[in-house]
Length: 68
Image (tube, rainbow, N blue to C red):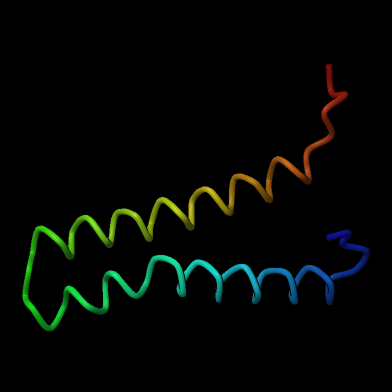
């Protein structure tokens, strides 16, 4: 996706957040009622890592690679 404006970026961020929650959030939601602390911890860590990865990917896309 090419981002040409703040609106494009906002739309991308919303879609990316939905995707992360769909992919990672369901594991956390299913572990909570079972009170499975180990599974909740693992799912929460995976969710956090997915968020970090998305933020780093975004940052990498904003940084000019020719900054030598």
